[in-house]
Length: 410
Image (cartoon, rainbow, N blue to C red; front, side, top):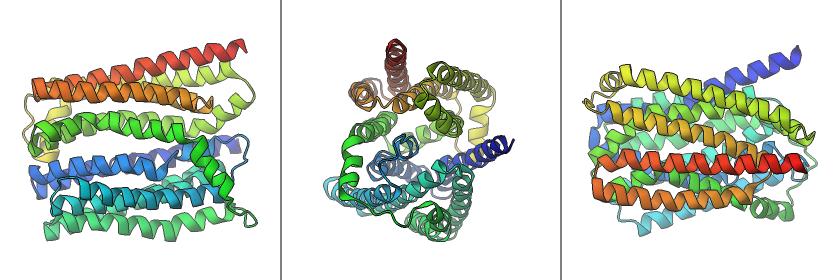
């Protein structure tokens, strides 16, 4: 009974927190579109996409390996030290990108503020891993709620009163830093063994053993954003903003996949340790069915209400984009189902195998997005998303199926 209450509490708070955190960019884009206009919205859309890609370097392998570490050989302090190093590395890469890119000072400043924000988010995530391992996922959710609400309110207030996107972006790393110092650290410290010391050998082992997972995650972010970079190369900031707006409802589907798998990760890891693959498969199938059901609902809502609601919220005329929205929603259903397969494969510790799938998909994403958008213009955007997501799902479905039957024969 107590365990059920804990699972429910973790699920509820993680769902609320993850939802708000994932919708941060949506609220920011709404505010920017209404206050600053489509041109600034387009600049924010591409710079925040870049910040999320570089964030993968800072977070490296993320919480998945930290939480699903069955052997427990690598300690929390090893993960903390490794995360400090990667966060600093991210900021160095950001400066290098700013120097090499052709961004003007305005765009570069916005990019740096957003990258500093995501570097702090990555650092805070290592403490979330400590809490999640100790069945305290609800505390992670509460932290995300605090950070999201305060961050959104401050961002909108600063942008409204100053009409300056740079000042608004500066507010984000400030909120993240204060949340880490005032909430995340005090909650996580009791679970970190004081006698433990970070060992360079194990810190290096994190980088070495989880390189392929990091590379896969990095490629995932590129795969999701490849059409955005093609838009930046061949089209305008206004079109970038329009598709940034249309993509926001689709991001709900990937969010849904994340928050329904997160509470089940500990149980799935335990079942794998017990070699109970059939029960793992049952849980996985239930999650897939939930994604399909939620996807159908999202597509129906998108068809009947999507564009009118987006017009109202963003104060932008998107009439004629209904089928574009439906096609992108369907593409993201494929992505969400593929994402679940990646979690199962991570529990299987089939990291290197995943990397090759990510690499192939990334190459296809680069070719498809640049070719289709260059040849077809705006019409190529939707087609490129569909090609990319279909490739992603089919390759991961095939790999997961092969590994499942292979393990059953062992």
